Length: 74
View 1 (cartoon, rainbow, N blue to C red):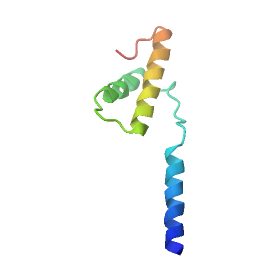
View 2: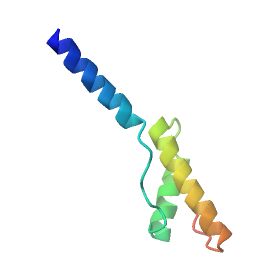
View 3: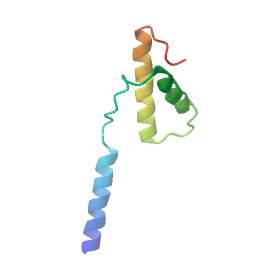
View 4: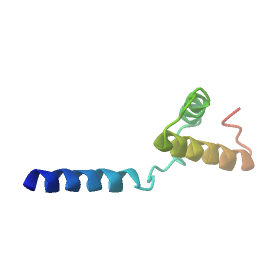
């Protein structure tokens, strides 16, 4: 019975941690590094939900920089 509770608790913790919102600040990321990570995302054939979220954040940062005249991603 105790083992079941421990596994249930671990499962719930894992589930909650996967729902965590990204706190990564990409505004401080160097243009070259952003471009590199953005291109890596283009070659992922079947991204996981975490990878998809991360790549969407890179895409958003690229769009924000493009609106300011910085063509970081092309």
